[in-house]
Each structure stands twice: as C-alpha cells, then as structure tokens.
Picture 1 (cartoon, rainbow, N blue to C red):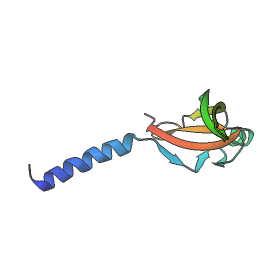
Picture 2 (cartoon, rainbow, N blue to C red):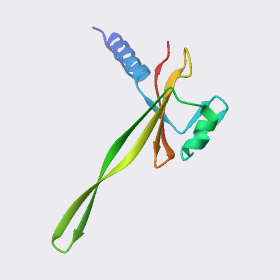
Picture 3 (cartoon, rainbow, N blue to C red):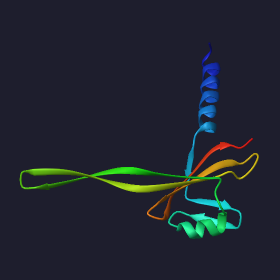
Length: 113
C-alpha cells in the first residue's frame, strides 16, 4: 500500500471517530435563547423547555486530610443531574449536566435521524 493511500485511510478512520465523538461546549442554543455554563436549572428550563429525559446520579469525590501521623480519606457524593434534549432530525442530541443546581457541562452526541 502506498503512503498516500495509507494517509487517506487514516484520515477516513479519524473522521469517522471524530464524527461519532461527543463534544463539549460552553453554550447551547435552544428554543428561546442561549444557555451558558453557570446558568441555573430554572433559567435553562425557561429557555429550553422540558428535556426529553432527566437522569441523576452521584459522582463520588474523595478528599484527603492529614493531621500529624494520621491520614484520612473522606468520600462524599455530589449530585449530578443530566438533561437530554432532542432538537430534531439532522441536529445533534445534547446533554446538559447540572452540578449543585448550575449548568456545569454541555455535551453534544450523535446526530438525530
């Protein structure tokens, strides 16, 4: 196989991976406005309406504290709420993640068929 053919094959494989990947962003345009990282849930709900689905889970955080010769690991739970929006055919599924009631992550997924 010639070098140029190998490069073409690798470029195609890279594009396929890239096109199916999830991408993070800092804003999301929805029904009646733009939401940004840091917005609260009620503001997002007002601008974007009800999500197609809601899911919540606990993200474990471990913190360490050391006093004298004693080391203690404390594990706490941070509640994460994920809202998924289906913007319609030909557009990307979008998941909004809230931490402590604030929008902390916006990720797009696969294209809706």
